[in-house]
Length: 219
Image (cartoon, rainbow, N blue to C red; front, side):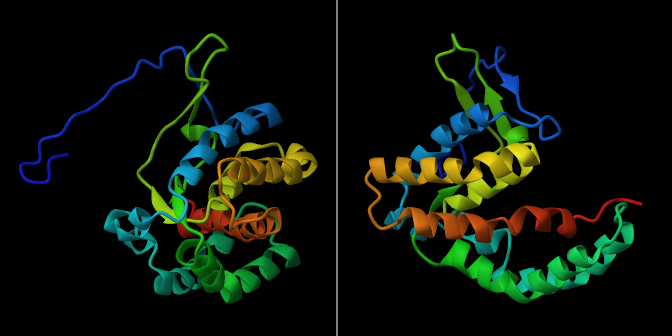
């Protein structure tokens, strides 16, 4: 986009042979591996780059103000519970109590404290187009409107928690997170080990449920 006169160029790609993923149809572990292989280069390309901090359109405050996140959750949680169709167990209530206390610290860590990079921030099956074996591009990621700076495992948390069968996730998630950390290291990221990566992934698992709480189900 030309900042002076607003003129722009739109690039189109023929993706008619690609299969779009669906969150309601769980991705296989192999498909998730392919998605990780696609997103890791983006993270390494912008890892701790000065441009990431200087671009105002990557500021998380634009889409999720830090100081407003916790009050919004506390206001929406009771509404969410009223509309929840499954039994409200003690575990569900305890999650809400824990999230209300920890949410701000988790957001601070994942979106404001280095190491930061460019993340998709809605990295799940609905936004993945899987190519055929004969296609030149094996996977295409779409829907970049939530692009923001943050820690890379945020994208992993959205992908694994929302796009895999729960049993598959439990069996494979440690290996998948480890594979991601190995890809970062292989690309030259030296200030981030597998232990910190796993800790960030676990913290980021708080975020996907919040998108549901923040958009209460219609009556």
